[in-house]
Image (cartoon, rainbow, N blue to C red):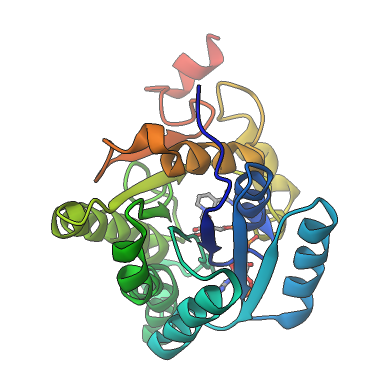
Length: 259
Ligand code: NAP
């Protein structure tokens, strides 16, 4: 039986909507107090109101994970609200399209700054508190895109998601002596506000490439994060959980058509 997270203090970055909101909802339902972050106050407050309505102790921090200073302030805000930090879900990410031939340096910089550096800065900011916690966990939202698959137009994004895994593996070694674990969840295509913006044609194409026949729900990622946060996952570090409806399995279009 998996334990609840009563008494845990959790930070979820990029949780005003999408997967982060789903993670916050699932971990909050399991008893955790949750500090949610994002850059836009209004979205964040709307999400906080929903969580509070369902009984989750919630706090907010408005800031940019690409800023080391903001990440330090975020950690301080969590300590002020809940007295500790036990779990960081480093989830904030962006995925603007930029075909390789035309990709500008500023587009590359933005994606690496938010997705990769944001993961590093958020992790650095919570380390002192995770050390005190004795049950410190870092759960990174990576992607199948980059670590396992490719998609034209998202070279920079794929590189940022693969970079998170390179970071995670060495961080797992550096943090092991303090009993802090770090793992990554690799979502396939999950129905979120961000993905909705890609348009119906993209979404239909994705649905037809998934053996389980539908896009993931944000809670599907939340439950994987919840497992990694529980005491029962204490011996798991430096590794990945793929949550993709089987999307990375088919070895050809024929294989998919045959099911
Ligand atoms: P989303 O719906 O666009 O939500 C992104 C969240 O991150 C929002 O709360 C956004 O709020 C926040 N955010 C963006 N940039 C930020 C920054 N610089 N600092 C702080 N917060 C920031 O995206 P999503 O689909 O849920 O994606 C969440 C994570 O899952 C990302 O890391 C993404 O790469 C990964 N992922 C998603 C999918 C998918 O199918 N949806 C698949 C694989 C991986 P603000 O805009 O207000 O800052």
